[in-house]
Length: 209
Length: 209
Image 1 (cartoon, rainbow over the protein chains, first blue to last red):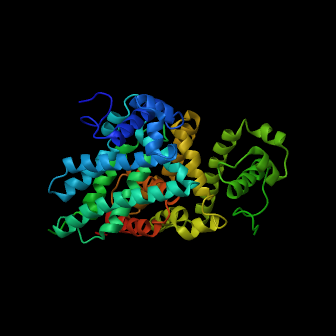
Image 2: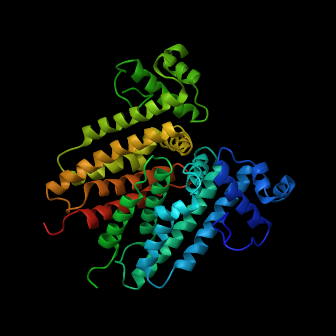
Image 3: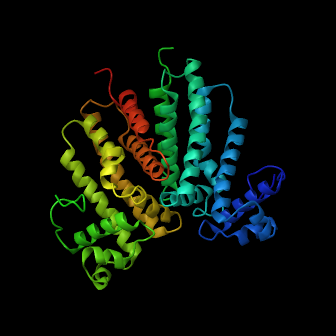
């Protein structure tokens, strides 16, 4: 296990090496302090290598968002099993459980990956290209949740709910907690997770089975 | 009705005049383009009047967040009745219903008050004073929801849920939708509101009454 990043093994290619360096630079300097030079230093690569792959810092960061989503999907696929109920809870906990979040952000509470995500995503209010990217990211994320819910409905574990609507609801909750925990002094995630468990119990699980 | 702002009547004092001018300047220029000079121009006041009341732009904006919360509480108190179920739905819709949001942001989709809120709140990732302010704002907001839920539990309309935990859940959902709708191309609020209604029905309302 590399102690520097949560990514196992060696990077497969220069894109992955750059993405890992971006992760390390974000962790060290935060969003405001991030520069191509600092990422290049982390990766021991030249700035020209970066500009071969990416137009600018914004282009690199939107690609980083894709990379994090791919990593999340990879980790989730390792954890996922046959039970839709467990899968849904695991999916949400991989993002919201504070012990998982702490693993990522042990160095500094203000330069976490979640915080960076919030800072980058807030640029979407004014920036059309970033808005387009996060719309796409959200949809990929929601599709994964909708698939889990649809599987649960088909298996008779969940009620006959609308998978897309349920996925939108759960995604919104996850986005809200991400937004809030990066911008508050405290961390209300325990209450959110407990309430989410109640929601699954009361609103999703079939009780007549 | 003043056509310029959603605030009825004339401002009571210079603080309220400044807050209204801040609202208009945000609507016109967005967060990035906001300056004390522009707010002063909107309010027809001198910059020195501003610095009599506020230390800097950040101080003014955190005060603006308080003002918006007060306005929200005022509007909600006008709409609220005796029925906790209706009150909870009204509270959430006052923020999330797209027709209400459009009323505020008819001029430009990128300079909405919700978008400004997201941009300002994202500063909290790096800024301790802003983080403290939003923690306080969240708590005031959650307390209002907890009071409605507690009233519903007492009246036997809602199940014997924990009002604080329920308030955290609902606040997180509202924060998530605010964050998402300001940073996406589309607006998934219809699906979120439909899912919220199902949540109230399935998880909150007593069915054995």
